[in-house]
Amino acid sequence: MSRPITLYRPNLPPDCREAARQLNRECACLSVDREALRLALEAGGGLDYDELRRSRPHLFSDTVVFAGEASLKRMAEIVAAIESVVALPAYQETVLARASAIAQRPVPARGVFLGYDFHVDLSGPRLIEINTNAGGGLLNARLARAQRACCGPVAAMLPDAAETVEQGFLAMFREEWRLARGERPLGCIAIVDDNPAEQYLAPEFELFRQLFEANGIAARVVAPSELEWDGERLTCRSETVDLVYNRLTDFALEAPGNAALRAAYEADGVVLTPHPRAHALYADKRNLMLLSDEAKLVELGVPEATRKILLAGIPPTVAVRAEDGERFWQQRRHWFFKPAAGFGSRAAYRGDKLTKRVFEEILQGGYIAQEIVPPSERRVEVAAQAQDMKLDLRCYVYGGRIQLVAARLYQGQTTNFRTPGGGFASVLAVPNPGRIPA
Image 1 (cartoon, rainbow, N blue to C red):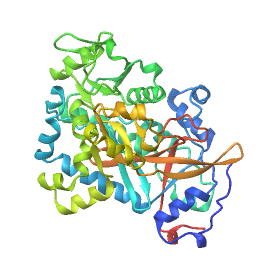
Image 2 (tube, rainbow, N blue to C red; image 1 turned 90 degrees about the vertical axis):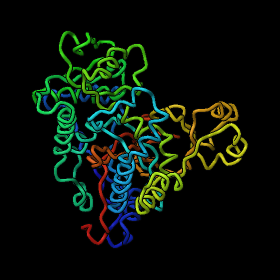
Image 3 (cartoon, one colour; image 1 turned 45 degrees about the horizontal axis):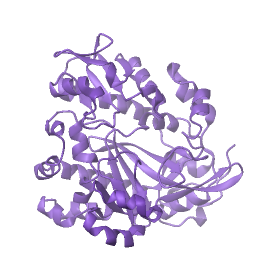
């Protein structure tokens, strides 16, 4: 049941960032209309909503997250700054020098669903990482349809047309095809992941399949082992596959089960998106070392204005070397340790939670250390008890443009979709409080 907002406009601070922080702490609205969410997810034959709630009870939070318009604008500026650096030949030469051989191959496709993940502190948003096959975009587009105007301030912030985001996602895949194949018709898309039915976000695969089919594109959800390459065509169950929506975390396609997909990609027999080159240019975590190092940015010829945006928006990130082990151990509370080639939150550790044994393993190589930026928080009500959730903000990006901003609420070291009251949450932009109706 929706609750009235507990903050009134005269009490809100004049700055939208501080207003968002205060709303996240004190607004008790439960803004998700569960029946509307059911309709959004079951539309067009969609998902079994009751089964989804049973199998994934913490996929969606019942609340929204507030973000100041200034923070959202700054995120867009950071994204644009990174895109401008990635376009530099000197940057590409530097990062591709350490990439896999398959990433060296230039391709016209950009790569769908870049995910820029941010924490927001008192100074504004700070970029934590970039992912090349960020999940949840379509689920969050459906979630946005189910937000209700439970009070005046929330009503003023609700987006006007959540459905247009979904159409933008569809247009993105069509654009990837156009960039690679011109005006030839796009016949079939394969949505590919290891053991796709067992993935936590498997419901999203089905939503994408239905979205493509409803718009005249045949679509299949398959494991890479179901694909076959005959030297001319990539097929699945004897049907030619034109484009692969890649949800694999084998970013270089090195696993034996990915051999057919790799061969087709190397022979330009399929449009693959996102592709190994996109991962090398954006998502290798060692890139954050370069993007947060002023001297390196100067060497690359990055303009001063762009450097200022990057240095303010990306926490210092450095390589972890065994010879620096004692210094890192003494300063571990200030660092978050991540495997350079990792994904999600696997094998990532807050320094203050590290045991000596795990730290010794980190020193064996392949890790970066990023200055900790504590996540902001959202207070929610769970079983009539107030709970403080950590949150991050994910920007879904294509071609340098933010398509959607969503939040993930959680407790613990990293996002996990295991916390009651947590999960994906829609993000509402908070203008300066003078423009928020009471």
